[in-house]
Image (cartoon, rainbow, N blue to C red):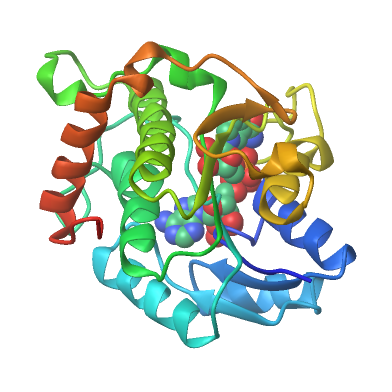
Length: 254
Ligand SMILES: NC(=O)c1ccc[n+]([C@@H]2O[C@H](COP(=O)([O-])OP(=O)(O)OC[C@H]3O[C@@H](n4cnc5c(N)ncnc54)[C@H](OP(=O)(O)O)[C@@H]3O)[C@@H](O)[C@H]2O)c1
């Protein structure tokens, strides 16, 4: 049995990851943005060992999530799943002065990773749209485009996974593209259901299959794919980690 922490487990792919893990007999700590959302997921998934609460668009609350999760006990695996899409018509800046999609999708998984003790396995959630992303979007002048911000955030999630895999050889860290999944984020016309969207993350978090224990990959449907070449650029990875350390005040422990 593994002990797994899943962020964004109140809906969509994250809730299905938690459900599949529970069904397989693992111990799961969930995460919700608010006490109300926590109560809702507890009602749907009563087997959850605990549900940690915090809004990932706040650095203070993200720090509290890390602290509360760690207080429940050590994890074998952490699945960084929580995320928002690019549908927002306007650029939103959070109370921390960060662009909202960037903060929820990229800064939060980085900060949780930097603050929590290293689990044996880390799973980051990217997207096929990472192919359209820019590692350093602030270097480019263009009008606000939510889908571009989303693609950039998902490329950066992939870069964090590859950087962590390189810097922490004792951890198996990978990034997963769940595919186009029918959820609130994916929309009703998406091609696949949540079961397919959750399978690879569950496998990476818990399986003893030697294929699940290889670090530093970009995967979809348990198969390694070629990432956006920017993701493989070690200098870009290091500059992203430096930017995230500056934005959060928390460097990734080396
Ligand atoms: N669906 C797809 O086609 C697709 C494709 C590629 C990648 N992905 C990625 O897969 C992951 C899950 O997406 P999904 O489709 O399952 O989306 P979803 O159904 O909208 O679920 C997103 C989850 O993240 C949580 N969340 C969002 N913002 C949060 C915040 N500020 N603080 C705390 N929790 C927050 C949500 O909580 P609430 O329920 O309270 O909002 C929910 O639990 C995301 O990282 C997404 O980028 C999805």
